[in-house]
Length: 530
Image 1 (cartoon, one colour):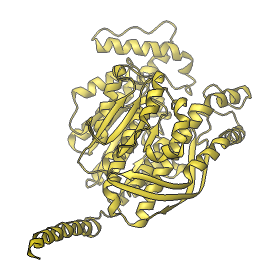
Image 2 (cartoon, one colour):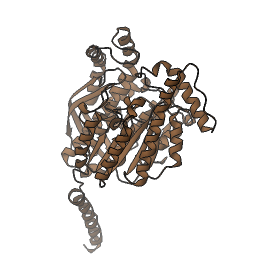
Image 3 (cartoon, one colour):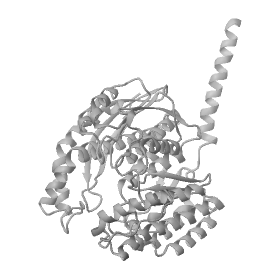
Image 4 (cartoon, helix red, strand yellow):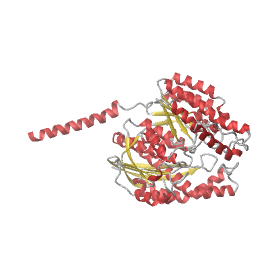
């Protein structure tokens, strides 16, 4: 018996330490509801800025508090910023962390912030924000501003007729500024008033970001993030970034991107400070210095910025693998890599095409076995959007893998349900609608006089367009139902999780009065298997 005594003592010590950790996690260190709630004034009301981050938060037992839809922008209808301020003043008392997009709170939404007229009340808005920050010094507040894109808004009836000339002139303005050369004159085909309105948009944005960067430097807010929307290698907002870089402080972050930033911030806020190591595999590593469409920096720069915000580090030996499919000619290689089953985490950042996943991978990703083996696949809008989505989800999944053992049964079901809802969205939006249905559907809607060239529905046409969408999505709805229903097995770190999904139903709708994107929604019953 004596020879076994040291072994028994060791076992008791290990068990006691584990029991203490379990006990302390659940009793002493469990964050309050306020600490596990994040208040968000989103960039706009689209699913990518509301629904997607909401589900990521649910995966790690956080709540995302957002304004009711009636308070937010709705396509070309800007939000009522006065009502948003009232909502924010009440909501902030219910959480410790706050994310505010000035494009929504100051300008009325992303689309409206592309109009220089939406900056007329900025001085008053800045005063109101300063008072707000001083009123809640104990809150962790992150402010985000998205800089204007290169092209004027196609919904701006004044500027859009000069879209080609203004975009070309905007590029030459940036090139001259970057080289400290005299600015080029206004092209003859652009009226002076139009040119001044175009430049005024960037100047208003410049003054706003400089003031908010100073707020951050003074310590009035915890963090200020400046994103860049739909740029190119040369575009006027680059000059704003160069100026901000000269006065940057530790709590001011400049990043290329827009619609993915909320997801990255949620991942950042809900995880601990220990970084997650990931292995990136490129289908075309020689293209890292390429500028992808609508990006104002090369691919390598964009990736490094988003890795940093998500607190991910690179390690070729890491059991977390992210495949970056960055060349449409290499879809066979991407498909072969997706067969990997050895890693704890396997994801696909599909940037081979703009605004859709690679159609060659759609059937592979919708397969029932792939649904469990592949943690996430994203291929929507810009390269930065897809990369940010995957990096955020990867960080969230690592957090979940560390938490899962300590969650109660309902919390586990909530996390897994959010994970599979997110998978449904990515397949329905990126690999069915955008990759397969969107182009022929848009062509038909325009030919049938239901939609104009901007993808906006003509008056009283949305319900008819919606029914056409439902009819064309129907065959894929059946495929997804077969893939999602039944028994599932996934890995979370060292753990293998078994569960069953039943009564699955998934639908798609147009969230705005346009055919540019869809919103995917699903319901199901999830049962844990022991």
